[in-house]
Image (cartoon, rainbow, N blue to C red):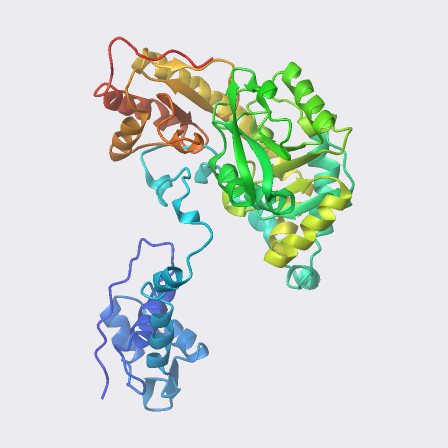
Length: 500
């Protein structure tokens, strides 16, 4: 007897093809036991009529399920759930690993630390669907050079490169990408490195994790900027016995306050996170002197340097490296795509050798197909063209943002001496967090600066307004909507003064 399957309707507006949606719904029904093994399934014609799709779509879905071993086809009889399938075993295995099992493990064996309790800058997973995404360090999906990237990916996946892109490289990186880094990208930052001094990583955060694992210890101290990059601070807290916050001002990190016994300091000298100020030349020299005097390692996070709007570029602190007490962290996330998760770590050859072995214990290497695609993207000039376009685009968006702030929020003070693709704004409100929460309900998404401060409640009423992910036409309406929210919380007179 043929079963009349009750499946959830398909979504024609989804990016997932209809035949894939149909496969998913049938396979889930089998796995959940709603369709028993050996059950006869509807004919292709009946299934197509039931789900509102073409008969060829139903045929393709059944063929996929047959190849996956969930369905069998019997001549002149039809389609059946494979009698050898055992969904009950699947359910038991899944149940043993479900939510009820994991907490029990941690209750019996408490972890040394609780990463889930650390504060991070969070945003909705579907942030790009928000009307006014003023988030920072994300890219406008409509600006991604999809056709260029697709062609580079097709080259990387060509048959002649199959051995390179599908093989296990042990701990090695793709030499093509390393070559592009040492000959084209790094020299623009004033860095001239050998291939043995470069390690490809799964984003800048993995580089920081590797550094912390190699340099850290329960008896060692590390200094961080306050406020600073929360994910970096969280990583360092897992590996060092003492994490010392060092204040920042309009000239960047207060180098004079660095502890003399610190093993390392993590700094964002070219675009302080989250304030956007640049480390002054005097403090750059003071920081180098500190490293030379104490042996402390300078960890330079050069996030976003490649896409600084035209006219605000600065050279990397690492370009002044003469003492081998520096490590440089770079990323392709801000220039190509955050979802790419490709970054690079530059340092002395002996350090990179150990970091490579440590990375190998974690993931061996980053996916070769991504490395090869990125290498081709850079080699063919698409990367340079993208940087040129983004710099011009961001400068234009910042001009629109400044005009909108002056028109709709004249009381807001844009913090001076900042660079990058955002504006740091001081508001006459008692709580920036309340403004951010309320604004999100109105479709205005902002990245909170709260997690950037080591102590809860330490932040002033500062908000970051990013322009990398929002189209030009949405900037002024978004600021107008934000102004309506701020008006509900404004304090008179303004209780804040710009941070020193």
